[in-house]
View (tube, rainbow, N blue to C red):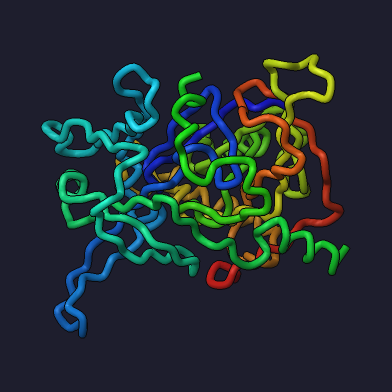
Length: 358
């Protein structure tokens, strides 16, 4: 198998940024989901009179699909603090909105701190400020705020973490390189640190083109857009569609050093399946629910892809993964890298995360 696509998502639930090559770390690719948008609800009946902040996810806010992201360096590219994500709005009224530049490593001193809880896993985050809030609010047409995770992380709950998954199994049987040096919490030295960013439940999501083709075969006049599944790593060459349901581990060998003895390799532990929601029905060109067959993809998968008893009402597409730092000798992953299955489970794993298990 080979890697065909890599993606990172600096602002959660906005469109992904394709990468030809990137760094790997225990908490995901650099900058992946370190920012998140929150909708502001003013409630005068609240005892504290403080506004309520609601997590914004593309499955609930379809219009988030209208925001495109691009990572760019400013200056000479030698200072990681100059790296920015450019956000562009492609929806109605886009004229005059321009491009918002968000520093990927912002200065956090003096920023207001807010509490954020995502899928029951709590953390602290920093409000980026009025300039960013005002731009996003003007695009959405309602008040939102942009928050930055900074050095904080969220806890991995249930049986998603490798340590928990192992116990469960036993019971049942470039430029990016230069700018990542200053990123917090990305070093391979932090063995065993299983914290996550604003990614839903794991640092990485792995999917295959073979499974994508099966989804496309269910559609009459169109092909499924793989970015709607919001993967980090896309593979090609799997023996069959949904073979990844049984994968417990993957070894990635660098295409840049294919003949190196002992090789430059990256090991991933795949712990659980990814249950799908209505976000895969969103029309990325309109920021609204898809019409016709495009709006029935979730229903089509419900027929035969509800294969995880831990999420029995949701279809499965893709596997969540964690970096196995102890067995990893490279810090770089790229398109065209070779991939082999290092562990195959005899049976499908069973997802368990309080609040997401059904």
